[in-house]
Length: 431
Image (cartoon, rainbow, N blue to C red):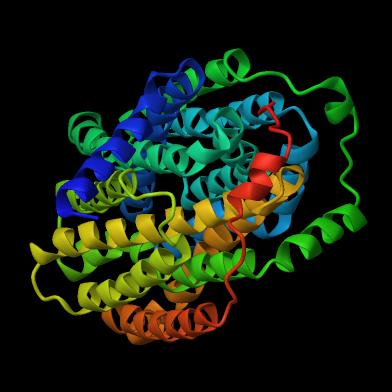
């Protein structure tokens, strides 16, 4: 194929991807998610800064991140069953409402001067539990409101809004922290839940009564579903890639405030800029995926960018100049986003529709659970080795893990495209 034909094909693929934003269901879902995530990221910037201002140690900041992400280990498989067998509209609306109460309570405590580090960590734990129970339902929406051949584009667009919010949220946080202190970020976070909850109740169709009434959370059913999923080598490979990336490289994101304030003696504005740079990189990576053709091997892309992320962690640990940190974080954001989104596409297209919620729960377990455990252990290693040496150790282990996984992937025999499985199955509405 000539370069002109390749370019024309790329633009055609991009145009088809962007056309999803003009559809009623996906477009409305996309914009509501964007607003909600902007508020969430504003709080994500403000919370570690609040903990630092309250005198919290690096271990407590790592513990806060652990409290947010660790519940996926205990609850995400239950959340996957809820996504497969319950009314996803209600699951999302109920748990998002509970989450909305957490920043609201922190605003009240800030106004009264009663906020303490342990309270902030407890709020993170509540958000983490509700996230673990609702995120499989949330992540299962996109494959259910687009055609099977549009799943990759829908996931890339969803990743685009997430990373756009990762830019706008920290930028908003920088303005609010300067103008009103961290409290403004928690107000913005609380308010941002409302549009998404309303959209979940309005735009998403109800599940049929038989599906909702058949909800069962027995351990045998969960174990059988997990066993079936893990027998698929493609799913196993994708999940292992996400787990290694999150466990070894995810702590770079968790400890950006320590890197900025402790290592470079930066300000809140510089912290906001560093987090925004990570989001800009993620947005660029997601936008690039919109023009990637359906036939591209996404597991190979996932492995390649996971290796790149591991190398960037090492560069971030050794750079002596603050100005290079946002550049490296931008590259890290792009690498992480491309790797995880490609792995997620493999997972969504290779999983059976009846097990999609449980498959997504394993993805969330690998991503969020890996980041939680990695953040906690990295917080401990920072106390022993220091910030830079702890990140270097993580980088070396990440590169070793991904090289091993890539060698295993090359030995996986080619199989029929998973999309055919999706096309043959009944398309289930997101309830």
